[in-house]
Image 1 (tube, rainbow, N blue to C red):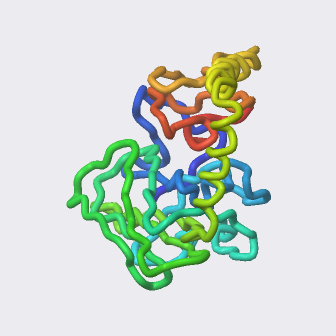
Image 2: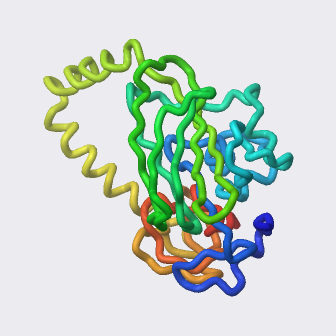
Length: 260
């Protein structure tokens, strides 16, 4: 059986691009956007989550469950609807983005609202990419809803579970956009154009400035165990050797990065 991820000493013996957790058959992944409940815990947007904040990719349990924590008592906080989980505003469809810190052959990806399966994507046993995206229709649903996203592994009895809270539909979301656009255009067209350029230039140094222990995190860079980077004003130490890609930012992949 798969063993839980040990925090923080997980990375010994990892090779570049390969993530190792417990047994060789282990696979790990979670919905990074819209943020699942475990992603919100990892991002510290919901406090007092317990161990799930360190291993959002590890909500694994037998297939066929309809809960947020895969039946694991240590992750019971994910089932607690009284925690005021932030809900992402979406329209009539949404793209779910998965980050897979260890890939494994896949049978299906299923999405449920209540007991109704609203979408299924069949991989036919193939190995997925490091990131996976699915566009799911939410037609017929409105208001606050919790989507259960399930990754069914092809060659084990297990699946990975993610609950994603959504606010479907909006009344006045389109009104502020034209108003805000019309206001700056007549008055500050010339001023507004340079400002974004200046802002984009000044946003880079702050990321690099607080780097007494390391450079700013960047996609495409190969990191080794022990490397220190800065991201969003915080320092992180590499736990697993890997080559970074977008959506593997340190704040989202605590299996790869240890906050220091």
